[in-house]
Every structure is written in structure tokens, then in C-alpha cells.
Image 1 (spheres, rainbow, N blue to C red):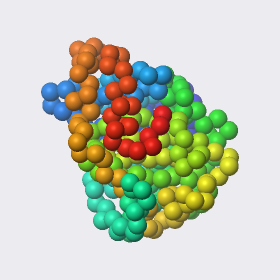
Image 2 (tube, rainbow, N blue to C red):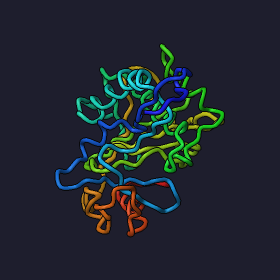
Image 3 (cartoon, rainbow, N blue to C red):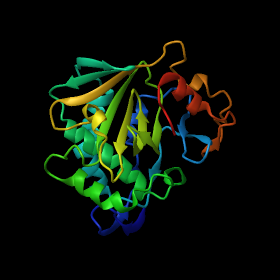
Image 4 (cartoon, helix red, strand yellow):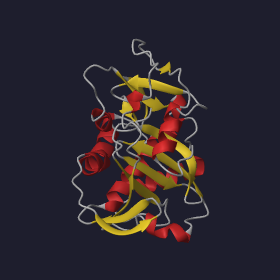
Length: 268
């Protein structure tokens, strides 16, 4: 445990190994016979495997502040996104997606969870977070995620896509284009979450895609192509599972190919 300044409270404290994506989200991918998981590391076309606990940084948060994020956001997001307690109401089809509303789920709290993950990635110095810096938006996003009230639609608009039949993949935050704007997206088991980080605000023709209040929770549901393998391990044939550190997957473009086949309009 090292001593340093916690990036959330600003105090000099003992810092812990704080996860960028909560460890609980990796648990659904654990296999008894596999020691590593596949994840995109954010460096060109390189893909790495990482230990089952996922990526962490021991220089950003103290134990108290890490616990605050876990209690306020991480547990709630895991219970609702991974434990599948939601009962969606289908509204209309939008191309390959189905626009749904979920009642009784706090959409603002889930939006703040997404903001907290990209904020953690931004303040981290890990190599795989190097392209996810929020720069001038970093303090604003921290303020939004810690605010007591609602977060307005135009304050970092956030979209949750439900990837049906695709539960075996995690991709840490990465920059991309989404809904005609600059965004940061991440892939969690069964979900892609995209946050618009762009001074131009939201493109109004995509307004219905984004969380606009506490209830209902807005979801875009997408059924991935069943003709392709659900399990990312079916694609990663050349992973060196005996290496103790993150190792390069020799088979380049694995995850890009997988996502492009299973999800329309996916772009790095």
C-alpha cells in the first residue's frame, strides 16, 4: 500500500488497488480452468489478457473513497445490469435496435456509475487508459457523479445498449464516435455504455436514446447475430495463459472482428 493524494477527497492517505471497472463485473466471466480474461488495452491494435480481478491502479483512490464509489454506484449497477432484474417495456424499433423503457430502476444512478468509470479511467496512469483522458471535462464529470440531484440530459449524455446473447466480453473505456459526437464507450457483460464527451451537446435526432431522468431507465436493446460465437475465448486461440503479466495476443484484431460482426456501427 502506497502513500499519496487521493484523487477524490484530495487528502494524503494510504492508497489501495482501486479497480477501474469494478471487479464484480469480471466475476461473471470467470472460468475454473482459465486464469486470464481477454481485454482490449487501448494501444493501437494490441490486445492483452489480464488476471481475473481486472485492471486496477494503486495510485488514485484511498480505501474510503473507493468504498464510496462502490456503495453509491458499483453495487447498484451490478445488481441491475448483470443480475438482470430489469423488465423492459418495448416502445419502438430503431434500425437493428429496440428502444425500451425500464420502470423502477434509477437511470440517473446508473448514468453516474458510467461517469464514475470513465472518470476513474481518466485519472489513472495505466497504459491501457492513456487514450481516455477527459482533460477539461474531468472536474465537471466528478462534480456530476457526486451531485445529490439529477444529471441533465445534456450533461454528458449517456446511452445504455443491451447486447442480447453477448455476455462474455469486457472492453475497458475507449474513445469513439457515437450518435454523431465524440464519446467514450465501454463494454460490460451484456452491455455497451456510451458517454458523449463533446462540447457541442447532443444531436437532437438521437435524443430518445439517452437517459433523461431517474425513471424510466432508457435502454437500446440489440440482439447480436447468433451465427457467430458468443464466447470471446473461441476467438482467442493463441493466448499465453502461463505468463504472469499482461501478454500480447498474437491474433490481432480479435475483438474488433468480434464486435463488428455482432454489433452494427461499432467503431474504435
